[in-house]
Image (cartoon, rainbow, N blue to C red; front, side, top):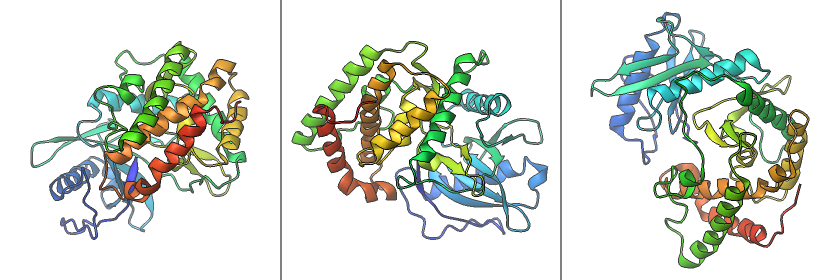
Length: 355
């Protein structure tokens, strides 16, 4: 999840961040800590001796561009936030990305080793904390919007199916470890992105509880068999797909939320934040057409799509309510609940397109 874009310059070792919005996980103290971690990580790469860092966004992690002497971005450095992924989990993410790069036609950013031939760079900051950092090649391109031609979503379906076929066949390292996106993770006692019902009024909460119950029943009946549930990207929303300007080919980025979930959840994430819009059924249909050109789906798979769309929407509702100081949440909050209720009404009444 990306919610803040800004920039910085550390020419003299002094970090200046202008107009920085302080939000739920950003404080002056941990920003200083993060900049120090990024600067220390950069020193682990001789090839970046004359390069500079530019902060480009703050999300669950902190992402920096690495800028060469000519002012051209060449790589990206991610400083992982604390208490989300441990060392083994990050190494697992990188192992999957590297395997995709070697064994499939899915374009992913190339991960770069440091001078010790390690993909993961560990830094210790002045406060004694350990921060994990990863460098990958910079991907130049553009993002789609929900108003773009639905034909592009055919390509995204092909990408997702290729991804899923790879995970079904891949002989993972014995130490491979990633979290899950299951019912407990979304609606349990400690939901990963916060409870969707936290700040809703009684009527809205009651109505959406009916949606949750329907989703839980449907997904429980659908099950977690190997052909339906496995390793997925889990955040294939439009901002995580960069299209090359000339060839209009996609590169899939940001595997930070990757883990075990329903394969069709990757489809649900494609329409994140605009699930309620009228063009979504056409987008989903085009995605499915592309997907089935690579991997066949059953009617069970197609029948679970709207339940997973609502599953994702409730997750996002929790995320927005638990991040009240985040600019994108402030932008969406006034309309997101209303749009969610309108979609929920169509869902409960069975007034959504079938596939």
